[in-house]
Image 1 (cartoon, rainbow, N blue to C red):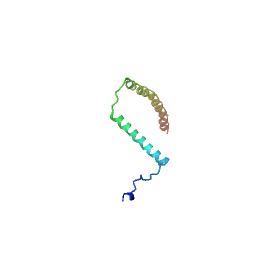
Image 2: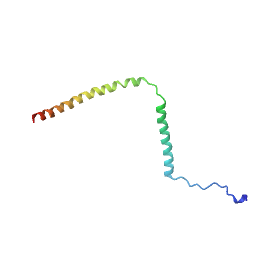
Image 3: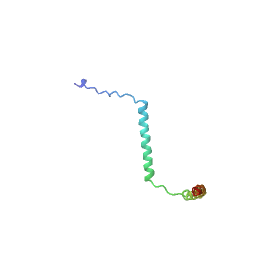
Image 4: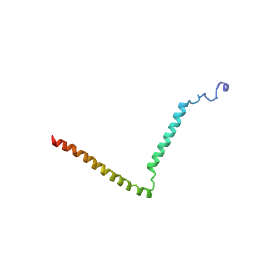
Length: 85
């Protein structure tokens, strides 16, 4: 009776290249998600570099104002053309 039982491991085919690519891609995706979740959960202390950044948007606003003035100047001749009709 004991000789009738087969205890050898089952034959499992070797994974193909695409299966390996899928497996490691899923591992990398899971690691990326964990990093993203940890970045949300773990607070980062503010440094002095963060304080210097608010001055940059102010300079961007200053550069935007002349563009807005140029746009409004370009709209004025159109309005004058409509008044001539």
